[in-house]
Image (cartoon, rainbow, N blue to C red; front, side, top):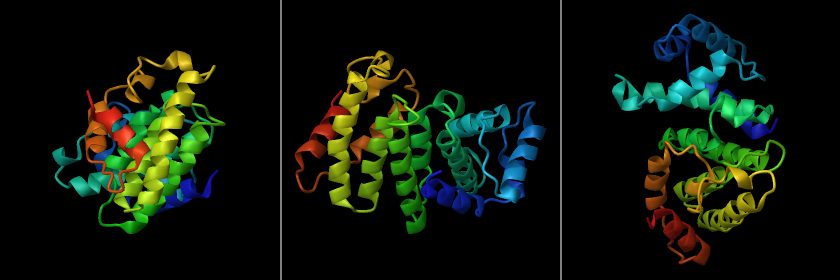
Amino acid sequence: MDSSIVSLFEYTRSRVCDQDIIDFSPGDPGYPDYVKVWTEIRRSGAMPTQADFDLSEVIGLTGWAKPDEWPDPERFRRYRRFTSAIGLALLHHGQCSEVVRPANYLARDLLIDLDPSCERHLSLVRSAVEATRKLLSTTNLDEGYPFFTLATMILAQKASDWKASEAAATRLIADEAAVRKSDSLSYLAHDDQFLFGLSVYNQVHSDWLAMACALKNPNRHEDSQLVIESLTDH
């Protein structure tokens, strides 16, 4: 287990309480079990290793929720940061993203819930996203891993780390091409659209597009410009 995943889990766990789990667990027939399982994780600090239904269902349903529809949106985001951290932990324990949450959905959740007021949260998410990109491109192979590469570019820009952003742009171009050339992954590509065509899981592409439109290229870096134009020129 990469230390960045453990650190993000511990950070997000420390910022939720039992009442958050009671208030925000999905209100379907599985609710009592969700509360029991997630409360035990929060209290014990033991990261789960298997994507049981009570974990994957909560991660998935919580991912679709809209924070602004809750009385305290930031409190809900703290809760979802915790569920997303568990999602990453499950991937790092070898669980398939289709069981946990599609890779580009989970990466998007991490980005939209980023705490803009906390440099530590940004740093932890950057490290965890980088580690997950590496994982999904090697040992737990997933066609969605280039979305984590794009996430590293977006996060680098939020940290005003232009060198890292430019390196991520270059790597994204290579990663996207690598998926299309991979004997194990190429058949999963949906169409030839850059990045967005890699997966049939396309329900959050509008969020990715909005984040891509916010990317900047102050140094006129060639690969950064190519990425921005490829993602936004539709």
